[in-house]
Amino acid sequence: MNASWAGDIAKIVLPTPFAVGDVNVYLVKGEVLSLIDAGPQTIEAKEVLGRNLSELGYSFEDIEQVILTHHHPDHAGMLDWMPDHIEVMGHPANQRWLVRPEGFFEEHDRFYVKLFLQAGLPQEYFSFIQKIRSPLKFMGNRGLTSAIREGDSIPGMEGWAVLETPGHAQSHISFWREKDGRMIAGDHLLAHISPNPLIEPPEKEGEERPKPQLQYNRSLRELLQVDISMAYTGHGEEIMEVHPLIRKRLNKQHERAMHVKGLLKNAPQTLFSVCQKLFPTVYQKELGLTLSETQAQIDYLEARQEIFCEEREGVLFYYC
Ligand SMILES: [Zn+2]
Image 1 (cartoon, rainbow, N blue to C red):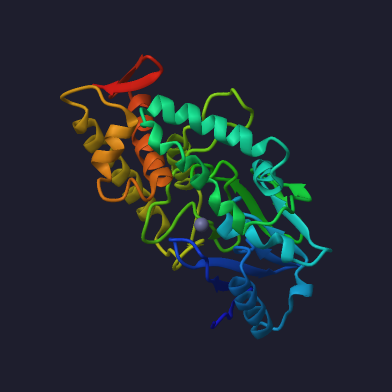
Image 2: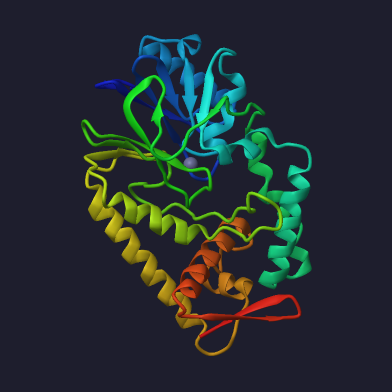
């Protein structure tokens, strides 16, 4: 604990059951009391949030709205345990993950079966598809009460604008205040790591799969045009030098992709075989994350026509 106000913003650090560690949520005092992100749905996180709120002079009942940076369970999990009267706002792409309508999991699994087949995964790995969705157990079922999009102002948070920043999640938005250049960046920008551009099923089944690394890079470049004095992040500490960090991230990712291109020099390879080479010690334990990271580099290289793809009996092979 040690939550304190920095002006009208208070950072609250909550424990999560995930490998990423603690998550940051933010209390913002404006015309109404807003909580940016809700934390995971665990007893521990709820207790820590309650204690921090009371240190700051509030209780759960005082929260008037929750605004989500994105739909992942470490950020959007605890909505069910929030007071009944609150508004819940976020990008419309949150909704299917929050409420998980009938057929959601079947569609989710069909998407991954196809992806795994194309990636050349052996059958014994298909059981991992269940594991990919397991973090959703730390999430309630409460949906948005209203949607916010790029350029929208946020009711009750005067002076803040919504920036759409897809990449880490299709639903990802950030908040920026012109007056003092402060940004609440969610997981779009983290001080010490680059967020995983996670593979997600398309919004409507059958549509083309989103290319999160390309979206992510675009979202980052757009921020270079925004006057940002500092960024509050979803995990870890604040970022004071935002633009230099963005340039560093973009360069690093390009280098990572060129390394992947190097792996394709001798023979065409599947996504899975590239993934095994990139993450030889962790791919079995973290198959979803490592496949996303590999697909990200492949998508980037393909978009730049550094590499090409051919299909053989339903399996995609990449070559250069
Ligand atoms: Zn996160």
